[in-house]
Image (cartoon, rainbow, N blue to C red):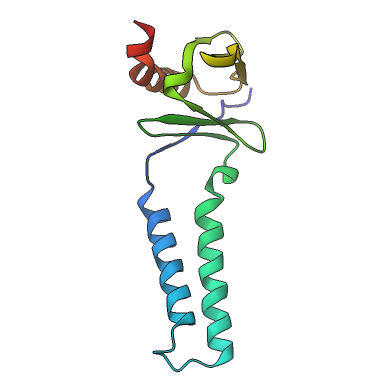
Length: 141
């Protein structure tokens, strides 16, 4: 039997990714400034490195099969798909963990999102449930 898949949880800002973005901006500024006497090859190299750092920072969600990112306002859930769904906590009316899926119902437009959970580790599902409870509890009471 296969071991269950793990969810990559990412809360707020990942400092490594933040450093990547700051370095990328620094490389862009240096490449564009006239304070440094850079040759064309050096300028292109700085643009390339800055671009690669940005790609690394902005595509983190796509590195993982099961990914959850949240802050105080919203949660992004990506389970076994190319892109994820971002749902504001204020819009979540109910959520339910069934045997094989997580179903989130939105307040407005009565829209429902379903995420497959049959292949995910039980402890990760409990952690996801605690995150949802913590941030939607005032609305559920």
